[in-house]
Length: 388
Ligand code: PHB
Image 1 (tube, rainbow, N blue to C red):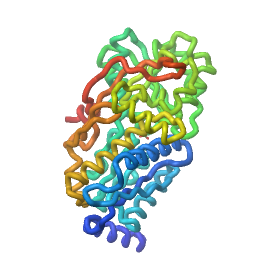
Image 2 (tube, rainbow, N blue to C red):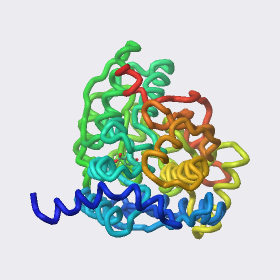
Image 3 (cartoon, protein in one colour):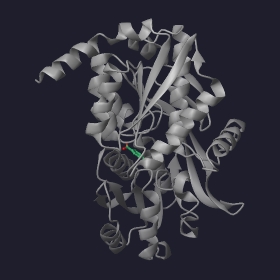
Image 4 (cartoon, rainbow, N blue to C red):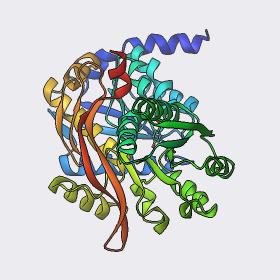
């Protein structure tokens, strides 16, 4: 081990004491502000800023300061930034994490330093098991993929080909969709995968078309949906007999308005739509748009907004004590109304429990939206539920 690393580890274990002694509670917010996942960074940063603009920057007598860092969605960079934030800036909380590998790379640091890691974006089930200091306000892929499979079976879809990004969340989506679809009597013809970085969808789309399946089930991460839809349309697949079904990552509110009429009618399952019908969501969308030049908030944004709420409420419960053990204990079991609907933190798994909505892409007032038409209430991560 390098001397520098030994020193870092020694420094990490001294931190909890420091966090309580300070008047300022620092949150190290690590997001992809540039690169392929930049839309996630932009959405979450905007939501965190909105939360603080609406709720102030003082909680339980402590000033809450957010330090934003761009990890360009490279996990080695995430890890270095997390280490620096803990050791140099003495942050009480690490937050953000645009992709699964970034969240995973940070987990050992969270454990070592006893600093809560609030996952606001990444969606692979196993992230919460990587450290007892991980807590999630985003979603898991199985939360959307399982209800999507159940809807497909009930609506006469019998033969499906799946296409996912080839990394953690894609593999979770593929497996949880396929397992449930087969258990309900459906047939999976083929499981296709595309690289996570710079994917070319054309070859797999050709393969999918050749199967003559009833439907193609797709997961690509937020930010890649528009490119996927473009290639889907270019190959004329929107005009063939194969239906497109998806997790809501594909018909992402951030890009949906520009996808064109080819996606009208696409059925998908997800945790948040900018069109969600509640008073809280209407005011959220309005405030978010106003503060961000008309930008529509997406499902990543609510992960950030609710992540801030979780930190604020936990600080209130501890009376401003920002030591990691106390904050984690305070976060477990918290429940509140989010712009997406009612949510809570499962005290056993530290994962989010939330409604999943089945939606159909429709044109409303000339703009495309995911319009919710069925609700599956209080969904726990199905992957963890199956392990029990
Ligand atoms: C992830 O890397 O965990 C991830 C990223 C974007 C999504 C879903 C999952 O839309």
